[in-house]
Amino acid sequence: MLRLLATNFLVALLWPTLNGTYAPGVFATGFVLGFIMLTIVERSYGKLFFHLAFFFVYVLYAILQSNLKLALLVLRAVLNPKTTLRPGIVAVPLTITNPFERALLASVITLTPGTLSVDLKQKDGADVLYVHTVDLHDADAFRTELKEQFEDRILYLHKLYMDVSGMNETSGGPAEGVE
Amino acid sequence: MNIDSILINYLILGLATVGVIFMLISALGILRLPDVFTRMHAAGKAATLGVSCLLLVAGIYFGALGDISEFWRMVALIGLFFATAPIATTTMARAAYRTAKPGDFTLTLDEMEETKGEK
Image (cartoon, rainbow over the protein chains, first blue to last red):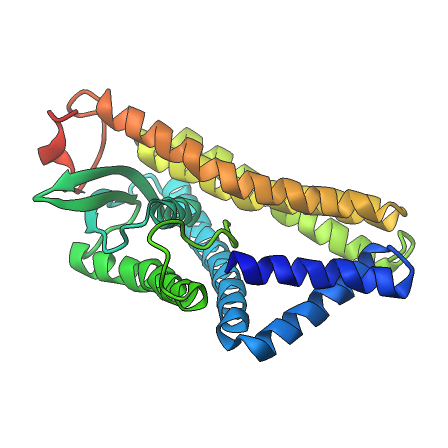
């Protein structure tokens, strides 16, 4: 993975040298060309990047969507004091073991309005992420929804990353797409 | 990208309005919501959209004035904000839970209660 990324940057540096100009735009063109070349050679490299970009866009979409939802909820609670919110803390058992990916998952959950990761603890030998949510109706439905929304996607990215790395890495998740 | 363009002007106005409205909603939320966690939702969350809209507007405005690097600087700021804000929020939520007295929170369900005595 790192080797491929380094090659990509090398091509990106080589392109302005061959052109004779060192503008950022030329560098970007070189990077894109290197990316295409490497994708032809190593298909999983391009796949990983596309899925990372897709995940990034998905998180932005989720943030925007639940921001609007939360704004409505807050407005309703403010305008009508009688409405009762149903906040709750739900235990979400984690399948992810990689520390970086866990931090990513917890951050994404916190960034998405309406949910907030409170703590990570051990329970019955398994690691559990405690998530606070503003409007809770069904704890089990909430658990599965959260896992489908984010954890499965991160697990899939991890699988793609392992494909690119040739399965010989034991630690260190994808370093890109930190958001 | 020119500051005289009507489209750019409306884009700036529109985004600034959205940002300010979200800031207002989060302020109202902090005032009126019942406990620490729900208030934190209102503060940290509506603020992410509010702050990023306002930063983006500043970037577009100064970018349209002629300095495009200003725009990228604001994009970098939004990225940093999104990377650091959840860590602070999680730390505060955890501290709030650990130092709480009974009855501090309004929770309909608390699956974390059994871990209360543990370190």
